[in-house]
Image (cartoon, rainbow, N blue to C red; front, side):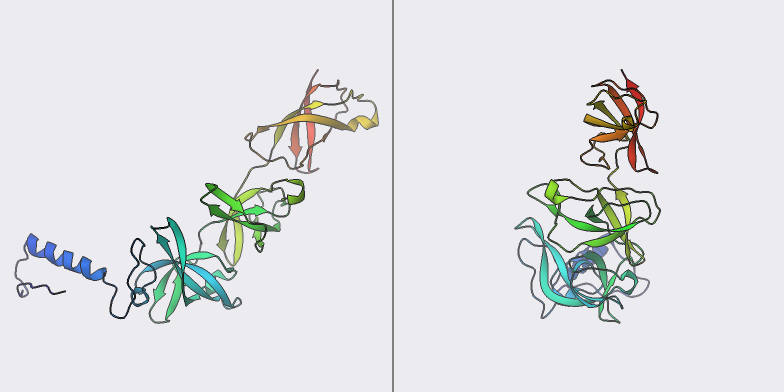
Length: 289
């Protein structure tokens, strides 16, 4: 490519036409792949031109764990294929210095830039990573650390899908504000779903599907309050009413609630019950006879 520009000396006025032409040339030059680099494939976005990785931010995928203790990994560039309408991973590996993000797993994706001095990628923001979707494998109480399954986006489903065959990773409730249900695949019971962010070398829970605080149900027996057996009431037709109707029951399936006031309850009586986080059970608040 050859461009002819009139010579300029310091103090010479620059016309708008001259500036625009210069800007267009600079733009076209920036899009060159460089000598010795492979050309971008038709219909795909730039990602795998190895001579032009400098000064660019890239989404990279962890491919190999070199030293978890020191935060060193091998990564591959990610690029979007417009032909296939999906993100793909390139084959060439680069080093990633994620010493401030100790705890990355193979398959994790981070935004990084190329550090010329060190000759490796560095995460753009080492204080906070992008969110990682998960579903709890084990039940979670406030402040606890439990295992979770990763969830990945599925174009066919149009939603995030839990991969129970993948390695689990630990999530922690650092602010002691969440309670969640563990997944029981054999009984078809979903676990609480959420988003965790990698901070200080651990996956900290930012969001978690709410659990049911208030429910309505029906008594399946004629309960006599003066009888000690009336403390446990068998119920059915359970519906969640708070905080949202899609909140998860902490006990699934829920077949009993407690009757701490030992009220008489007729069969098919309507019951309002509330979750007690101290006893970890649903307790009767009101009975409509």
